[in-house]
Image (cartoon, rainbow, N blue to C red; front, side, top):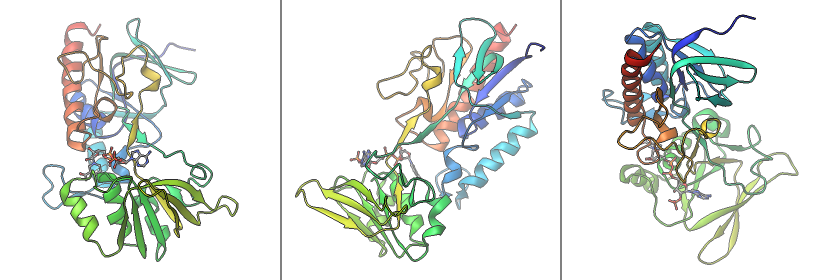
Length: 315
Ligand code: NAP
């Protein structure tokens, strides 16, 4: 078998950060190879309307935005391949990425692997996940719950967005939050608390998903953290929206992680790592801002860094 060819730059991930890095390295004539993981297009493909991405005065559909970025990257010579990197060796040049039996060689690497939905871990959640009533994506699954009652777990912008989206279909949306104030931005929080179809269940933690024996969700048991009383919300769908976990496992070590598992860039830079020619971008390296536009900005910065590094050390 012939040895794999050496890529100029391999970008891991197809979210906002990865595709922006592809546009920039593509326009620099580096012919980037983008490795596509389990969620092509990243988190925005599971969002409905994106209202805060600059340049779209009337908002843009998340899926459409990612399609546009992909087309733009393709136009400048980006190649896409499916591969789930499970291990790396950054001790030699070129850098080595392993995806099962496959080895990919790269002079420069940009890791933009994003973050995956966090789950509550309560009984019944795993058993009834996917098609049986527990999900993490209202955009994907909301339409299955027409004229039914559903619950959203969480109090951040994701939970608020999911709850508002679900009002298009569901009869009632219970928003279950462990405190009595939402973490979501004020504009989203106001929309949620004012919506006639949304009932906020404050100070409440989910305890169990009911319906395991029947193979379908029949309710969500919640406990009020102040009074200790429990109740079962009579819902057929449960949307978990309690944040995300960064997809950094295959790269650490050798890369450094912070205490929450996000990449810790080298000091003085948001995207450089302690390994020359290896960069990080987007939600896998940012637990502060976590916005589509900041991820895109990091993708741009990582691409410029990679381009400059290759100009001096690429051979
Ligand atoms: P987040 O802001 O981290 O919120 C997570 C929510 O889940 C919090 O309310 C948290 O409660 C709750 N939670 C965490 N663990 C829990 C558990 N085990 N059981 C019950 N509840 C739990 O995450 P996010 O909403 O996904 O947002 C992430 C970032 O993306 C944020 O910066 C957000 O602004 C941004 N975002 C923006 C938009 C938009 O602008 N359109 C949309 C979505 C997300 P506590 O509040 O008590 O900690």
